[in-house]
Length: 63
Image 1: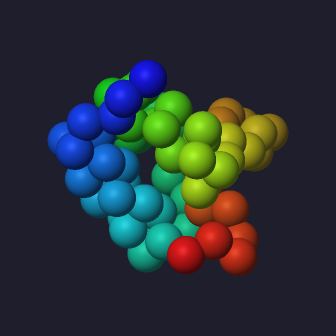
Image 2: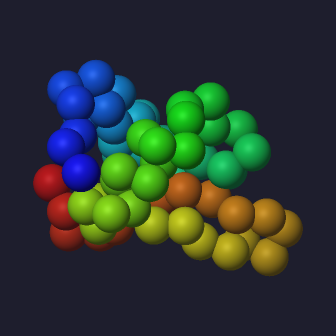
């Protein structure tokens, strides 16, 4: 599957936001599922169960 430059740019924007904030509750993310899935597929982000919901966070050690 070819990823267009829009997906890459938008995913990079979300990744910068995650690095700044550490993690973001999934219900507060206003990016499409495609963008979130792109970061998950590239192993740049992960979904964590916080016990009160789910959050998206950066995988440590990735730049």
